[in-house]
Length: 213
Image 1 (cartoon, rainbow, N blue to C red):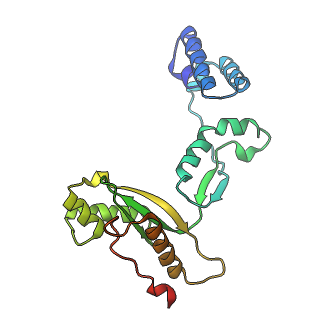
Image 2: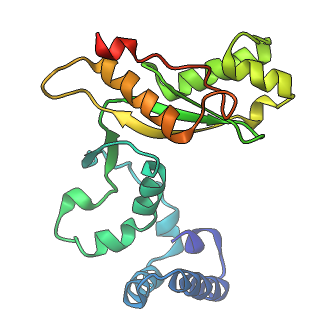
Image 3: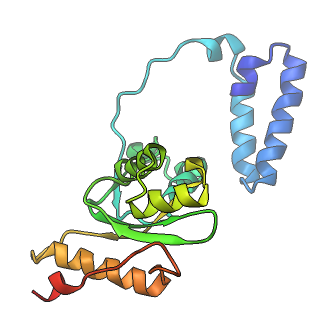
């Protein structure tokens, strides 16, 4: 459809449309689906495609799932191949548009990596974006008393070299319980497993006393 809109002469548009179909077929899209879509486009006038269409006001289906390190990749794959899924669900109107992905609330435990290979494990009640922004601000402000900022400053690392990854999301317990203890325990678990205590990493210490109170 994009080819028909931006390419004016019909002969050139036909060539471009064929090239586009070949590219999609090389990516693994079904040949039958591509033929149906291309034949449908050939019957439409370019002027019709250029007309401004009203935005659909229908609501997305909400897909609720638990966030993890592969969530972004999953979202890209789902949206990138939605045409294939939709083609098999033509009778279900709710699937005309890709679903809106929503993640269950939880507290993330993240690992922060520096260019020299050292890492830091930590948990936070704030969003990852806010916490990473705070780390970067501390580096720029020269706050050497903070573990991550101090290392980046002393090692001469650039703030843009800071990398992070969510390694676990601790969800609220359905039956209640002390969530702080759970967070501290999981944080200590990852510090031990990934060996991020000084001098192998950037974690100065971890305290398990609150867990046993």
